[in-house]
Structures are given as structure tokens and as C-alpha cells.
Image 1 (cartoon, rainbow, N blue to C red):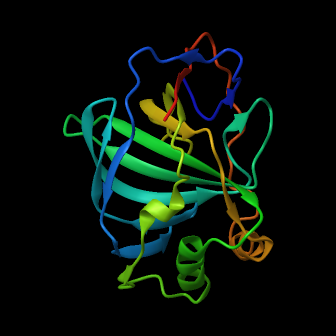
Image 2 (cartoon, rainbow, N blue to C red):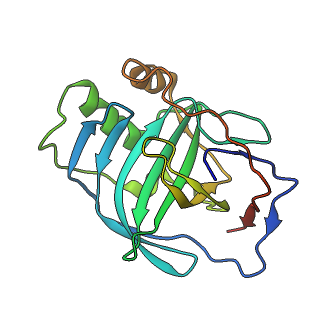
Amino acid sequence: MQSPIDITTYDAITNNSPTQLLLNYSTTVDDILDTGHAVQVALTGTATLMNREFELLQLHFHSPSEHTIDGEYFDFEAHFVHQAQNGRLAVVGVLFKVGEENVELGEILSRFSNDELSNSDFELNLLNLFPDDQSYYHYTGSLTTPPLTENVEWYVLENSLELSQQQLDEFKLYYDHNSRDIQGLYGRVILYTED
């Protein structure tokens, strides 16, 4: 089964044994690179997702959003990609709408636009790229870029953040449309967990 999907809130099933996202990310960005599909940020850290430990591998961005909620696209989407010791992948997706400037996102975009892509260690509070309320939708899908690996756990946050129009335009200088089309749900269950 593939990703992204349209998350229909009416059909989402409330998780009877909810678990919060426990994120423990480093504040140091190791590298930023252009993968040909997205701006990718190399990071370290851990996350506890559904009571299992995952290691943070990287962060990358898409515009417009890949996931939709009740058919609504967002202006931007961040993907925090994790891997468990058994190789299982998990992605936490954060949606953005145009509004106020996002300082943390600005730090990343400014380095990308200035071609400071290698050996660009700098400090960043990654938790500022998450909303305070971390309620989320969970389903099983795939990576959204080649090789489109399946059996990936998705955690798409219900609440969005903001980025400025200037920041969005800056990103679009490099990737005007790097989002995959919505894929069919095909009977998959979407779980909703309230923070």
C-alpha cells in the first residue's frame, strides 16, 4: 500500500490505547543536501512511536503537501524519517500553511539557498518544527519518493504550523512541485490519537 493518502477525519478510528510521540532530537544539523527529490537535512536523535524506539535519519520537505486532510492540501509538508533496529521505517509528517515566518525553517532554507550544503553544522531546535498539540493520524503506507518502499508507518500531525510566503517562494525556487499524487486507501485503517 502506497502513500500519501487523503486523511478523512470522519472515518478515522480513535485509538483506545493512545501513545504520545516522544521525540528526543539533537540540536545539531549535520548536513543539508539536494537529493534531486527534496531538500534533505541529516540529523540525529530518537523517537518513541507506539512504544517502540526509532532512530531519526533525516528531514526533508515537500510543496504542496503530500497528505491532505478531508481533501484539503496544505502549502508545505515536513517529513521526519526514522528507522528501527529491525529496519522498519516510520515517518512523522508535519503540515504547514502560509502565515507567519518560521524561524527554524528559515535557518534551513537560508543555508540551502546560499549553497552552504556540505559541512554546514549548525544548531537548530527541531521541536519548534512541531505544533504544541501533537495529536496525530497513524496508518501504514510507503515512502513517497523512490524506491517507494512499503510497510512504512506514518504519523501525520493533525495540527499545522506556519511558514511565510517568502519562505515558501524560496523553497519553490528549487522545488516548485515535489509532491506525489494521493494514493488510494484500499481499506486501510487510519487511527487517530489525541495528545
